[in-house]
Image 1 (spheres, rainbow, N blue to C red):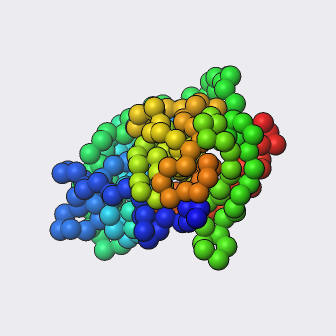
Image 2: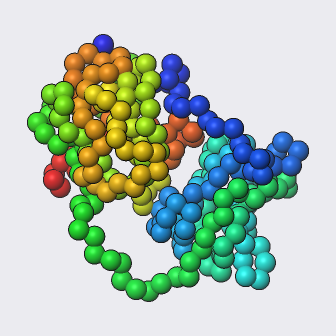
Length: 265
């Protein structure tokens, strides 16, 4: 039996406890971290116009995101809010600091535990990048086995390929999880760069050699096709999440992306 959608049996990795210094006063909104997800320089380095994601709890109640400004606090409205994540665009005039959030009742979280470095805007042309923008995740012969959704609410797409066939990063980004789970087997999650999305590889032959935090470009080897976990036959179970996987994001049909990446190949 092929791997079905993992919730609720597999709801993803357990969320780490909010670190001291990120918990809101009185148990209200709290911020565990803030990271850049679009138009980034690095995970904690941004420019005005970059999109950042706050992780924490009760963030669906956020009404304002507050950045440090040269002349005082800069308040912006969040773009998107869920219980465990909220996104916002870094405003003009923001400077390095630890941003925080305010909920609809006026409760203020403590500042994010990690400092967000805001660099000055630049008009210099973007550097030429030799690596491809996208890549099909299986670098070898393959065939579609099962699509997204259906009667068993399949959470991704199953693509058959011989065990040992190389797997590569479909998008540039950062390794977010590299773990084993009884149903998913050896799995890898990449937090995509430039878009608020996560991509997931399951049933890999062995744990990926990439450590959490490793930056990848499209086409970077990430592992090989396998049949670990609850899988019948060698295949890749591939998922595409808008937002953060298992933490407030939403799984969407990855097939249109796979077709586009293959056509661009």
